[in-house]
Image 1 (cartoon, rainbow, N blue to C red):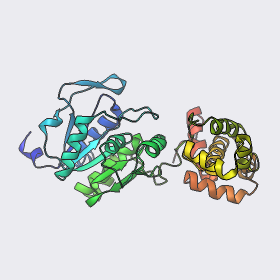
Image 2 (tube, helix red, strand yellow; image 1 turned 60 degrees about the horizontal axis):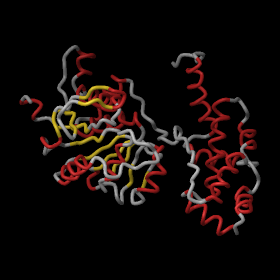
Image 3 (cartoon, helix red, strand yellow; image 1 turned 180 degrees about the horizontal axis):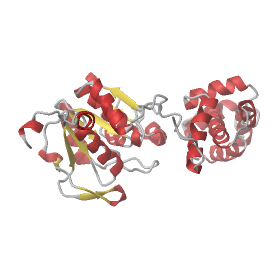
Image 4 (cartoon, rainbow, N blue to C red; image 1 turned 90 degrees about the vertical axis):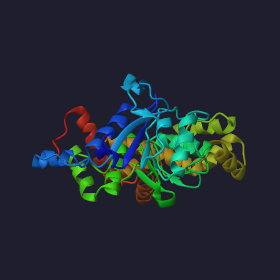
Length: 349
């Protein structure tokens, strides 16, 4: 390490064989060029980098990460005892299997570094490692929306904020969690602004064509609760309502099918699924409405009726609460994406 980089704030990117290369190398590329590349492109004079960025792992030996891409750590975690920021990159993890008992060396190191004053950040499923470490207990945290049920069942002391792209928590905001995979871009810009200047963050966004996600994660989230197997009567109701979500008085129908009194049914449904029965129905209806908005030109009032709502205004309020966009705004956003996929979209201006 030369004298210049030794004086820069150090950011360590913690990688593992389950890490996706897009997160690891995307962060590395942006953070190493922050402060340096923009002046060169706009004025012809190289600027000064903001960070000393290191890729670290449990061991220093090279390994292949997700998609068989080679990773050569600068050093092992054992060789580092100081860093301003440590970013836990995403780790591929099945959504029904928590990483209990894994990453023990990394977890011990993260705890020690946080105790020494490091900011600990994570991207996407990297928040699962922080949850395993107990570092998110009692705190709000972001992460990929696909892990909402895992957090609910296995990390109940963590307040999962599935709608957030970036979440700042803990004393002096030294726990920073980012949402789904490409929220690493918001994390990078945040760190550039925090350790550099807001102007440098804006310049970096311009350089890489980053666009903020002001609507959060909810417009992208697919809320599809799993069919559980612990309660056969409730499982049968889940299967039935998946095909009959538009029926009038859906909760009463399910209680009758289960042969249970309404209060008993509601209690057992919540225990088995983690959702109140009507909330569960709303989720199914909104997801079906999304499909209609993405693929048809059906009027909003008709979409509402098709999924079980006679009151179109009430449907629109519910939809915005669940998706963070009005039905019309949702249609504009995702219908255009579909058109791009077909190759028939007009160029953006």
